[in-house]
Amino acid sequence: MVTLSPRTVSDHVALAEIELCGELMIAASTAIGERLSTDRIDEVLDVKVVTERTTVPRQADHRGDGAGDRRGPRL
Image (cartoon, rainbow, N blue to C red):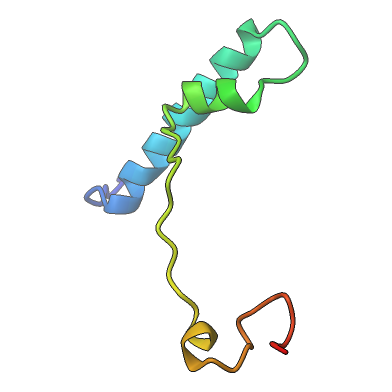
């Protein structure tokens, strides 16, 4: 007798990953070249490109010790 456990969140994630892999395989099988371009992969996976990013200031930038400045110490 096999005992079936209820589905968990990880089951849904695994199924979604399998579906995405399948979509990539289908796209790869119909591709003309050897590889899919990054743009084509993004299209297949329905990835939206974000052009603006909000950055979080680093703590050293607020301390004024120059540790967060990659150009070196202030003169």
